[in-house]
Image 1 (cartoon, rainbow, N blue to C red):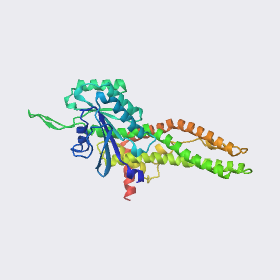
Image 2: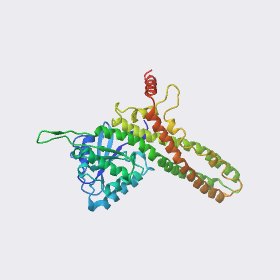
Image 3: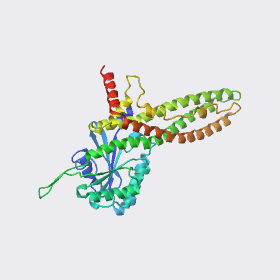
Image 4: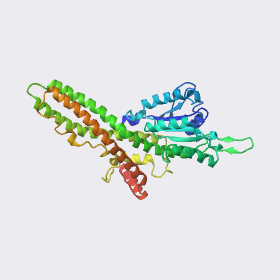
Length: 386
């Protein structure tokens, strides 16, 4: 287990208008009276308020937004923009929102423009979310379908899960009982969110990671040029830079692959600790990613190589002999700047390839035949317990 996995915190957002039942949903999902027990500050002022707790030895932060009201809409949007800016795809995966729930009250029977705007902001920030229709016991099937149709028209049928939920068990005065429902469906949606978050955010994450890594490498090369270039050794300097550039290409490949594995391991660890992959979900996220980090005793291709073995392929030509021999110090530095520009162009072209391979990874994980699945599990069991 790497340090990033050990330090990972599960960050969850519960957002929605005032009175939609966010607090009840938090208690239903994560334990009775979490909100009322004083674990977090009352949501009466601007901002997203963290509720820090520990579940199954997993550090969890639930971000409960201050209620959205008509006269506070712009302030609410500004707070959301600030949070999303801090958690862009290029940031550390442990800082991302890992699950997002946007709540719409079923009893209201309508989706408002502010709901659409906020959902769209999350999607535009490369996040997958789940729309929770709270107090769904008040809805008829027809009314629920009307809400779904509005959301599908604004986005698409597969933009996100739409789940009816009743968070509170109630016994009415006439003796009838309103049961809680929706938790199992939410947990299943969370597993799907994990896959989609990796697919949607990792390409941009890799792009930003590689750009920053390139800046560090470039600074080291520039320092070398300024320190070593003299009147008579330009040829030696340019030859050394070309060697270093080729070595950097190889090391960057490994760094990016390692970074993707780090992201996968963080989500795998959250899934395992939060019990988001019970046996009833066939081919679940957690078990597949357990396979992803264990060696295959039969010598077959490791599962993670579907994702990570070739996601970043920078053409060697980009690095090969890019500096000529007849240059002075300033000429070499100018060429280095031009190389950085070309490098970023190449990275942009690689992003779609990363997403394509991640989609392939998800497809293979979710469609592997059960016989093959059991065979792999048995091999790993034998490897662990020979």
